Image 1: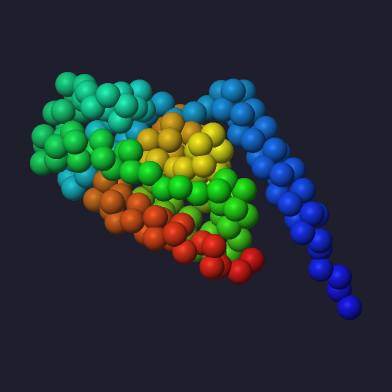
Image 2: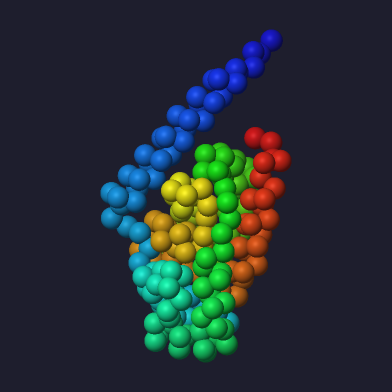
Length: 183
């Protein structure tokens, strides 16, 4: 008969796992040479490169650069719409998120998202997204799209703007149901 782990063991395990994730997150953000610098946005027939710095400025201050304003105008979108999408907040426990994203259920979410937010080569999308999501959640126990872009582990990240809002809503819905999923 298999013995169930004690509550103290589980609590200590979670604390240790949280500590390890925090160290890995800090190390990866401080020591990593590669972090997303450019986002290649595809929206309808348009394709434009925007620096992550420009998107961060829009998310933080509401100020859109001239090139970003031009792109949004061509896409028939307002800067406020993009700012709201970049700042949409989903609260999540980083340890639990890591556990879920490393499960079969996590793969079922990461793979479709990887079709919308992906590496230039479209390889290792699942791993790149998992790292960006967990790193984004580590500091403040929530995730915003701008944080995912800032923490993405390749210099360039490709985003299909046509499907972005749909996928983000799917992620938000998934995360709100995560506590009910078995491991």
